[in-house]
Length: 570
Ligand code: ATP
Ligand code: MG
Image 1 (cartoon, rainbow, N blue to C red):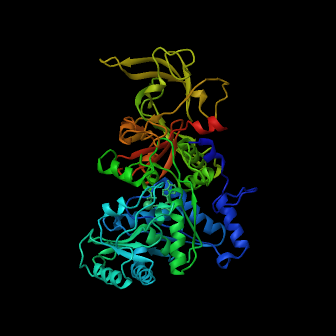
Image 2 (cartoon, rainbow, N blue to C red):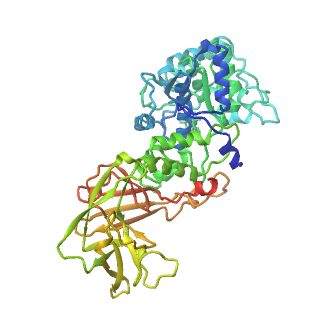
Image 3 (cartoon, rainbow, N blue to C red):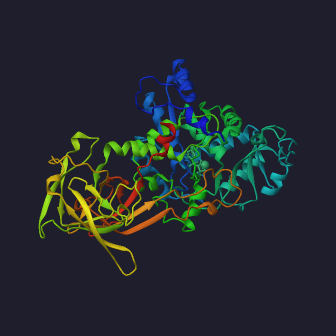
């Protein structure tokens, strides 16, 4: 796999203007088609999810592409549920898909369609083909049919039913529809060419019997069209001009075109682009379902999941995903994109938008022994240095505060600029303090650290000229709010999950979730609503999770501040 290819073939700005833009190959095609007035000189795309799972980051790329093109070229994009597999589909998925697309900021207006709404029309297309001698009923089993399909280098063998009279096929097809035949006894096949070098053209099955209830049509149907017979025709019914799909469908294109030609319907055209693959991530609904059903994660929206609902709960923003899709671009060849770029995109976005607050993940107490007992003062803290309009807030300060356990060392090395015996640091927004001692518990762990502060060094009013090398985050002890903080790491420990031979679940990262239950955060965090995002200074970006209670916030870490992407590429 060629990493750089997928990362450099880029520069599309979905719906956003950019000074000098390089068009990707799909935009080039669209601009040419529009200029030539092809298909009425309009652009009409669709996003066609199958409602058999939650959308993932790969779908987000397809959504940004289809809806983004429609926005950019004044066209329209339909939402079409490709719901032709009754056993696997469910309205739960339909609802989540709509929610996810809306959250990304796209709008299909009143164009919410379902392939199942076209079952009558598709049935009509099928009978038309039978009457034209272009389709026939085959009475053999799936195994028999598949055995006679041949291989790419060996031609297939004609079915003994291939030349049965159209009348007969029509009658059986009607009986199939009426439920008179059992599953597996008959299929309808297009009559194309059993010797074609393109396997898809070797008399593909276009209808099969399935005695299953459908999430929308109930028990009305017991025959269902295959993907190939439903997808392209649905495109035609909706007058889709540009039907964009991933590369694995390239070999289906001749069949797509064949149906359109034989049925004489709207000439939609299919174009393929490379699917999004992401390092340290699986993007396949089937595999993601396995993780959910096997309880490897807490659900489709577990914040470690690459589903849109998972990364939303994790704290990714719509803009960060759109910017990521834009940076990854649209390529003609498969590659693997670096998950660090996705992480970079959310940092870039949150850096501008997220207020800073103070919090301590693993607290130890710091007692400022010369600070008056019983006194509390309010200090000014800047909400966001990147945003002048974000203003300031007040945070309490008193004799006892919490600091991060890792910010104190009993015997610090020379380059450790935080706290140790006799060392001085600044407490952010507050004073310079000097360590005078510490206390250990019976287990030998540091329990409390003692300091003295210098009242003349108050932040913003310090004229002492004193310089210290370290500044620490802290939270005032009396007003601190206890929180549960969930630290997420990548769900997989293997970079390229496309090339592994064994079960992908063997590659799960056992340290993908660390829960900090003793964390202490500043009072303002206790009042934040679910979904509020902020930066704990020096520690990363976080979001309030829906598992929060009235008394205890639950906080997800979206991403740390360490930007490996910028380091490598900046
Ligand atoms: P999965 O393999 O995860 O089940 P799918 O292709 O079967 O995905 P669909 O619901 O059929 O899922 O996909 C809807 C649309 O999203 C299709 O047009 C498909 O090509 C596109 N899509 C799916 N996965 C990706 C991906 N990784 N990158 C880009 N587009 C994708
Ligand atoms: Mg699919």
